[in-house]
Each structure stands twice: as C-alpha cells, then as structure tokens.
Image 1 (tube, rainbow, N blue to C red):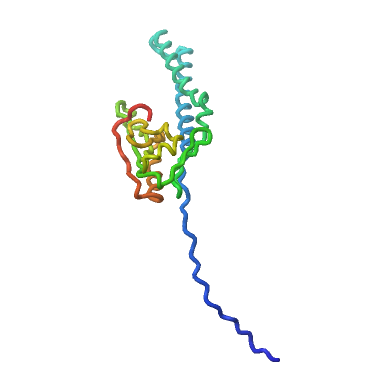
Image 2: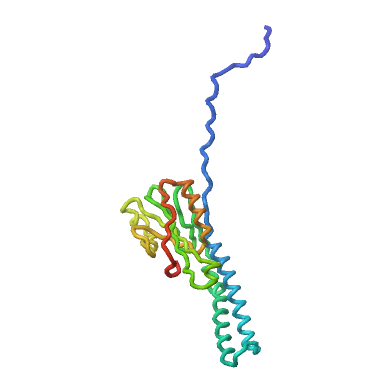
Length: 218
C-alpha cells in the first residue's frame, strides 16, 4: 500500500474569538492617607511656631515687658498643643479609609470604622458639593480652603432600611433626601470623582454644586 503526501483535514473554521470585555480598574481615593499627611504637616508647622514662641518668652527675646512675654508664652503653648494633636490622635488619623468606585457601585472601605457599599442600581444620582473658606485675612487669598463632600441620592424608599450602616450620613449637613460623605479639604478629589462617575455611571452624575462659603468644619 502506498501513501500519497499528507493532506490535512479541513474542518469548519473556528468562530472568531471575542476579546474579553474590558473592565476598567477601580478608582480609589485614599482619604485616610491624605488626612494623615495633612495633619502631620500642619502639626509640625504649629509645633515649630509654638516652640519658637516659648523659647522667645523664656529667654527674654520678646519686647514689651513681662506682660508681653507671658502672652507670647501662652500663645506658644497654644500652638504647641495644636502641634501635638496628631500625636495624641494618631490612632484615629492612622485608620485606613478609602472611597472606591467600581463596576458594582460605590463603597466606603473603613475596616476600623463604619464601612458601607451601595450598588449603582440603588442610586438615582451622585453629586459633589463644595464650600469655600471666606476671604477674611490676607492668607485666605493665598491659601483658600475648599471642603469637598460626596452626595448620594437613593433610587427607592427602601434604601434606608437596607443600609442602616449609612444612617449617620442621612441628610447630614445641608443635603436633603440624601446622604453626605465629608471628604475633607482636598479639592483634588473632585476631578477624580468626576472621572469615576463618567466611567461607571455617567447618567447618574449630578455634577458639582457650590454651596457658598464654609459653614463649620464640613
């Protein structure tokens, strides 16, 4: 028996391979880490000012007599106490806290606090609100503090019953019929949140709402 050259068997062609659906990576804002860095910087500056004032008062480097020296010393103690706050509250400052946007929804990752997670389908809208510090002193024109908050609005009336872990955020500050998560004085969060919303849920994004000047610490 003789064999001719090998001829491959041609079967039906394979269906074209569909590329896997692209899942964008989560958008993560490290709120705890940013707050820790800002507190350490602010505490270091305040502590240094306090120490210089106390040394000036004790070594007679102030002008105006003993009354002025006492006043400078008291002011120095005040600044020094402010500088020590990050040390005293280090455990709280060092607590990890992250705001995460992904394909599921929005979640607050706070292992040592009160974490929560909300699916996109549960939200009718997500917005950003901000207030700015009043310009009273010259320094306010150079460095103007902007408070940033994330506002979440439920899509149904059963939301509050399903999320008791978020009750402390319900109608917090000035928001109505919604939840407000304070994110501190970091305006850099705004474009990050906007990017996350346009990536995952553009139809629910309500934009940025300016609420005038700052009221309180939130």
